Length: 350
Ligand code: WQD
Image (cartoon, rainbow, N blue to C red; front, side, top):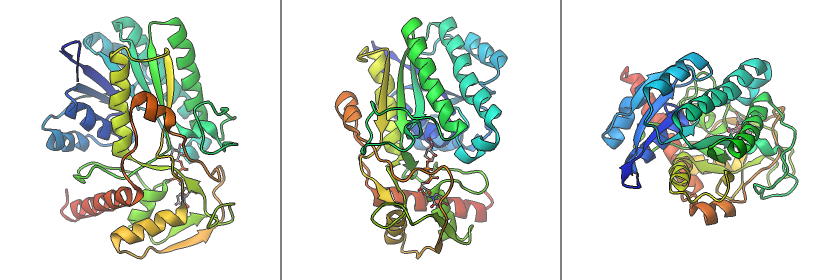
């Protein structure tokens, strides 16, 4: 990315993670120099080499905990040439946050505060923040727009996303900082190279990796959490969006700010497809593209789940000039290709 005839250097925190790694690929393919910071708590450094195979450039990488002020300050004193930041690094499991609230607040909020200190010290102005549709809870009106009321969070995870957006609302009003918060709906799928994708550690919380792990034989049976919702088939509705579409929106967002095209110090955009699918429709899509009959059973609802949510994406479409391009079958096929690649790597001991 050449802005004012200079190649831009972007710090991607959490850049070895699922969405982070796909965003690093898109940034590099858009001519950016990338440096990743990650504590590898929830990801693996193997991703760096895979990114190198995809783009031809292995990104610079430093491992430390951004929630720790000392190494974070040290990093910014060593890197005074960063032009912008895309901040993914956070804990993100809703269920886990219910049992470990303090760790979630300390990590997710603390890391944003430490990054702000670095921005102030180095005069870094632009930050893209990884937010979530979780901030809406169960919207009263669907599709949900960015101006929908933010309801009381249902989990410490969701609360940290709301808190970080509030922090940005005030810091962008009082400091020389500008921010774009991107509210993801349900990111799924994998890069079409099947070299990078979602790497859930342990038993997956999320639907799609559980589907592919069941189909590949790692899990016995998918539990479908409830079929007594007020939907066409009784199962809950979500707005599933391909991770590469999400990644591309981050490139557009950081470029918008560096190109001085932002319309306010803090802008917020929904990143969804605008279409909702039920759990059973996702299963049907998977069976269609994979040819595998999925073993699943209907069980009780999962506490904390909202019934239905999907995005109004018109603001991102018009303001960012960004629109999700991939349809649900392509998303599910890419997730299945990735699961099969993981399986063959396990067999070959890679
Ligand atoms: C999707 C649907 C489940 C697993 C989470 C985070 C959210 C965001 C996206 C980060 C629901 C059902 C799931 C299973 C099932 N992440 N399901 N059986 O909960 O919508 O959102 O990921 O920003 O913050 O909360 O995603 O994939 O867990 O669930 O039936 O084994 O699939 O009930 O209806 P969710 P999910």
